[in-house]
Amino acid sequence: MTTPKKEIGNHQFINRLLLIAGGFLVLLMIAFYREINVWLSAIVDIFSPVILGLVFAYLLNPLFRLFERRVFYRVYPSGARRAISLLLSYIVAILLIGLIVLLILPQLVSTLMSVVSNYQSYIDSTIATINGMIESINGIIFNFFHVKNALGHIDASIISTLFNNIMQEITEEIPALTDKAGSFLSGATDVIFAIFISIYLLASKEKRYSQVMKFRNAIFSDKVNQRITKICTTANNLFGKFVEGRLLDSLIVGVLTYVVISIFQIPYALLIASSIAVWNFIPTVGFLIGFVPAATLLLFTDAPLLIPFTLLMFVIYQIDSNIISPRILGYNTGVGPLCVIIAICTMGTLFGLVGLVIAVPLLATLLDLADDLIRERLQHKRMPDDTENYFAPDLSMDYMHMSKSRLGRIIVRIEKRALHISNQIAGGNENKLTKKDRNFFTTYQNARKMNILSEAPPDVLTQFSAESAEKAVRAEYNAQYNEILDHAIENMKDDEEVGGVEV
Image (tube, rainbow, N blue to C red; front, top):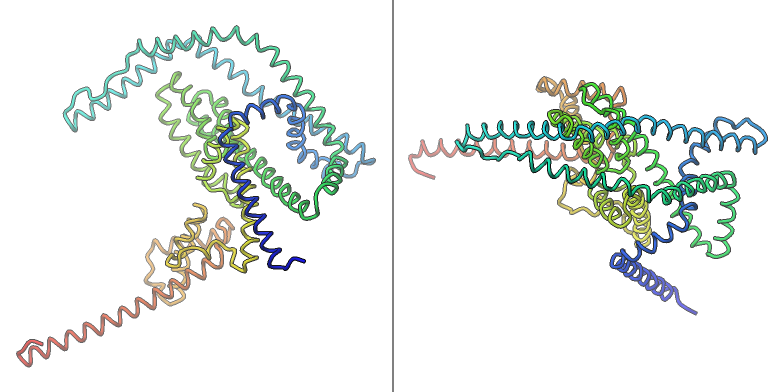
């Protein structure tokens, strides 16, 4: 019979062995990712209708559940309620997709036709604008450094030849599109089959769930089933919140972009706003990816508007990344900007557009599961599981708060200043406050009343109070020490004058 210590040792050995095997498997996947991609592409091609059906069912399930449980919950029998909810869910989805296509496609076609038919005039006007800007820059350089023609002008003939070659290659590729009609028809067939599969899955989702649970209970142990349930629940919550949040954020950014560039009379407003809204679904870099084709279009059609357009897009990007997106998605994903960029670059290289879309929720799921595992291990060792307990002991709360969000750090700085002013008022030093401090504190109180400013964590305020009290005691001690030192120096000077000798 094995002793408890031996059982614990065997358990730790198995965990370490699994960790090493998992790391080795990851290294193998990275080393042979091209071969794995070929294999995965073949699997996806074979099961593409099933995969698309699962994706359609997952995306439409929230809308279907809304109709079934909130709108038509009084309709009986349940079969009629489910049929009506399914029908309306697909009608709403098809209408939304059709509306987007009808809004974007006509303007896209007209824009492309205009660029193709008038590309030579667009090139001449763009080159003239850029050469004018170069002359202005050369004039500024000459006024300061007395250097003539520091920057050379762009040769219009070279740009025209290059663009003509590009247009010729595009024209030659157009007949080749007819050869891809078969693949297009195959893709359309896959979509049709996927729609029917998704309808079947949504109509019988309870039965499919019971079949999966029956299989799991027959194959795996209770502990493994609990772990699988935990992983699936975490992934579903994070993926669902991510998709809903990104869709809403993209819609808001698209509408905001359309309104702003329409006010400033920038052409192709609907096309540009749609492009940015679609690409904005990808976190962090999606907005920039959508900006590049829009800026390129303006460069060749109306170059003088490129600079104001870039400034407007920069402002909208800052509003989205600092206000809109954090408010919609919240701070519970645990994925910082650096991790987002690394995940997008890695998954985009491995899996293309699909990798760009799933990179952030997949990373958030893995980090959440890893955080649970680390917390369990620390609790097993009877150690604290809060990250703040593992900062260097010589760091203050300000540096520890650097690990949190940018908006959170701004809120904490506001709270710190407001607490400092509040302590001055409570100590009877209200007359010493400047006009700037009074206006700040009034604005702060109004923001509190209207619930615009969120509450700071109590531990942060406690730490700030302790730091303020420590600074006050230290300042009072320094003042008393300086007073005693000045008094001693004055006495020494008096003794020196009276005695006539140096001390």
